[in-house]
Length: 204
Image (cartoon, rainbow, N blue to C red; front, side):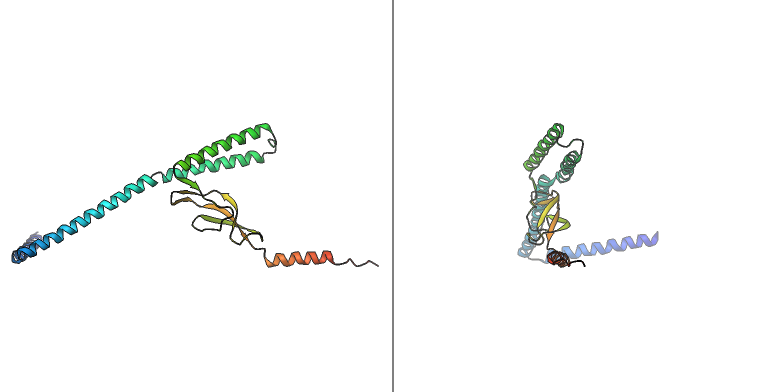
């Protein structure tokens, strides 16, 4: 206990000495220097307040613009489920070419269009993918499709739609991209064609 009291008293003495040193230094300053020192402190305090104000304004704008980011992302699952429902109905052999199927799919299309319209009103846009060059910032390539009529790396199929919220990516488009026919396949095709063109030998 005595040691702690001694340590506390010594630290208090050091602080008192520092304060006395500062006051003595301030006393030694000329009035003009004191004014400059105060102006410098005031300028730094004002700069800190201004920085805090800017940070607050930025956070407020982001909260206003992107506050519904999570909700918007979850809403996309509804559009996906509509797509899956349509695909399941259209694949059902019992319902094919029936009037019930046509009406149901039409209703689902109306709901889907309404949902996309609501998203657009809230600055959520579909990402254009088909016939676009693969952009890693917007697209996620899931598979490659051989297609000599397209430049390699061109999106030829959209597996799942991607969306943007203003300038932020809600989710990337899942796509299939084109690639050139492999040389192995080309050689195989050429060999098959040459075999077809060769005259068949007569059997003795």
